[in-house]
Image (cartoon, rainbow, N blue to C red; front, side):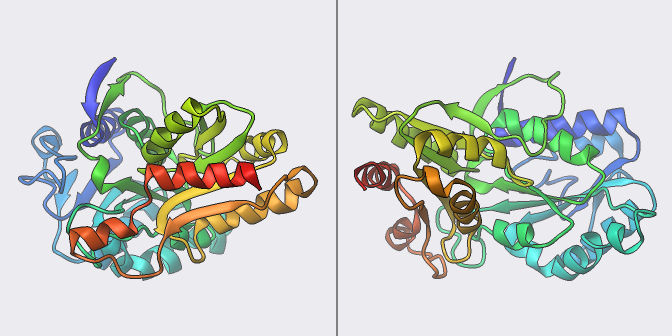
Length: 325
């Protein structure tokens, strides 16, 4: 095991996959000398050359259009779109092309690409750089959507995403890039669609992903000290998501809390809560509860930004209210 940051873990995964498969390559802005926004490509252009770590113009639709065409032609591009906010500039190429080609050509063509987009808050970067857009991509048929929360998952899930034969929207969190954790450099690709149970308990099921995993872990420590034993899951894969694990847990606990940083309105938490309600109606002891961000642009002001953030205290309080219902 090696201690790596979240960014370093993804760089290792890409390096390993490029070494294993000469059809894997990456393209995006400032990947070469700059090494990406968080150094997640640092040194790779020196190792693999400019034809496999490709610096592009500042044009997300160009990046994604090139990636889609290259994927259809048989390569496995990793398209770096920097922040998820900028990924919206490539929405046509992603939604109307990448997600639909395999279906429209009856499987005769496939689009094995990875669209890397960084979601979430990072102190003081305001409304156009702070969005969590996972609900957009989960809504579109044809995409696989993953959101790693730890360095180990960023290593194993990126390997899995690169090897996937469908387009993968790969959502890293900006505030996790410097997070340190143990990584098994020889770990196989993760299984897409499999959640991780972080803490087991019979009282309340808590489902989350990305940076909120760490917030929920803090809340769970507080809950356990008070005698509450939650069943905490990090989905890791948002589509497909691990319905079996979540439904099995809720049938045991009778209570569900879904926590995400993205805007609450029409968020993925609503889909999970409704799926659980339909499947576990007779087992529920209380209505499912969601925690998410307000339907408002993220402010630049630090005190106002903090009002948009989900806290450990809010998660713990929501779980206690569920238990009291």
